[in-house]
Image 1 (cartoon, rainbow, N blue to C red):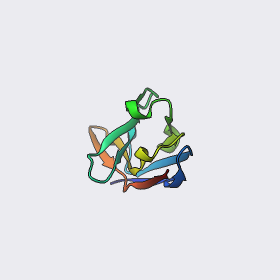
Image 2: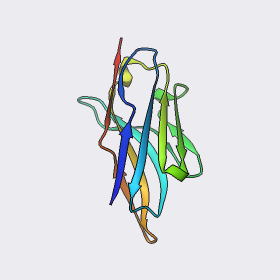
Image 3: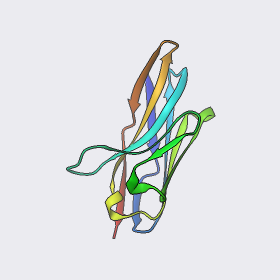
Length: 120
C-alpha cells in the first residue's frame, strides 16, 4: 500500500504565502506524475498543478504566475509554493500521485487533504 502525507496548510492573510508538501511512502517501485488538486465547499475537485517525473509542469490558469510546483524524486515528495494567495484559493488541497506499485502495475493515490484558509 502507498500513503501520501500532506503538510503545510493553514490560515494566511490575502497576499501571503504558504508551502505545501506531500511525501509518498510504502510499496513504491517508482513515482510517476504527482500533482495538487483542491476542493472548495460546494465545488468540484479541480487540478491546481501537476508535474511529471522529468519535471514538466502544468498549472490551472487561475494560479499561473502565483503558484509553483516542484518535486524531489529521491524523497518521493512534491511541493506547492503558493504566493499572493487570494480568498478564492481557500480550499482543501489534496496531493495525488501515480505510482508503480509493481513492475507491471501503476495505481493512483490520494492524500488525506490539508486545509488552506485565506482571510481577506
